[in-house]
Length: 145
Image (tube, rainbow, N blue to C red; front, side, top):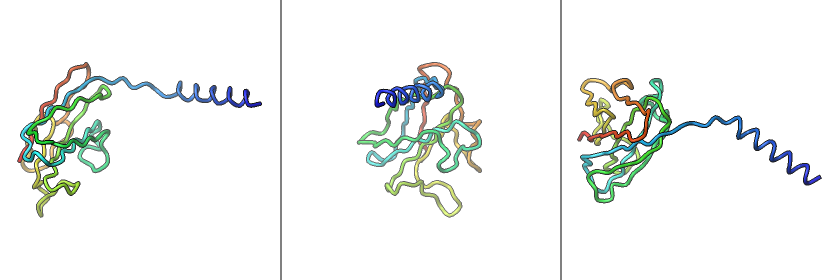
């Protein structure tokens, strides 16, 4: 009876793994420069949809990096192929949020892929997007103070 239960378990596990589609990823390197502080946390948010772009919690991936005395760093990633945009913030006071002034303009350093520098409104996904279609993509982002 135990052997039958074990066989059913293996069969079920194989069926579940066969139903899960394999997502093809490729290497992307994000290079971040002009860090204001060499001790503050840097957060990277990776978006792959227009609808979720810049919405809290709607990113596909997020990473936290300690600056550890550096003014720039390189972050290798594996991303599924497609269109992506990256938003970076540096949390100068380490309160785990992007501080803004009374009208919502960030008072801490930030940056967008394609080095978009918004003036009157937040950028759109299409302005920040880049295509991940083959290995070796490098995305350079300079933080805005």
